[in-house]
Length: 279
Image (cartoon, rainbow, N blue to C red; front, side, top):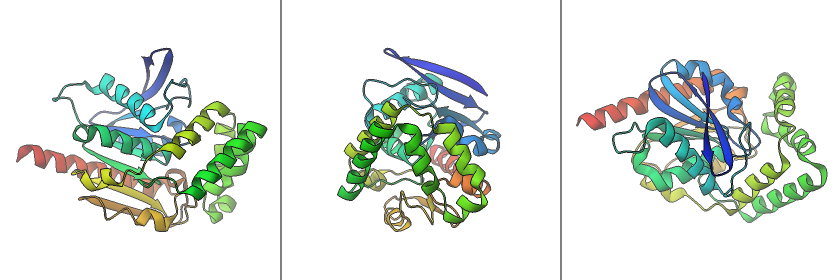
């Protein structure tokens, strides 16, 4: 496992590279960093080359001038180009995004569909925020401006886990709070503003002709199950994995099932593209 970085104007952006094989980019979500994939790293890196960014403002990475979803997608694209090259013969990565990372994945696919071998939305959605969601995000911004990031994450983190997991796996909730409680408040606010402004990207799902994965938490409150299921019929080639005992943190709550779902999708997509190129 190697830590690397790129320079974007005055901002240094860090990422991790692990394993060998076909490239896979794992994009973390809101108030997380690359370490959120820690339970998946070993099993996936046995067969694939993992490229795992710390998004701008997360982990060791600095904020960038354009903190929109599209701006962060362009940052991830720069990392991909640095690792894999820019020409038409460069390997095409599979991109998996968790939550906000899924929004960034969709922005990447919107602009660079022909450069992706496939992509996955892990507790994420192509639908834009409705007015209720936007209002709730604005209230959260006001709360953070008044109370700071620690109090916000301490309050919100338990809601990311299924109710039984909050009781039976309290260590996970405490780990999330201790790991990310000191998150830069300015970055969290920038993320929420970016999510409020992001457009509907269901057309990306409809037009993409490579495999698409949906991993859905049955008890997810952030991306409700019913809303997640409404998008699954849109892609031409869709794989759906429902995590019955997870909410919004399936990679921790059901780490073995999540890891296997990711591995199976990556293997399938790899074979799909091999067949396609040989035709």
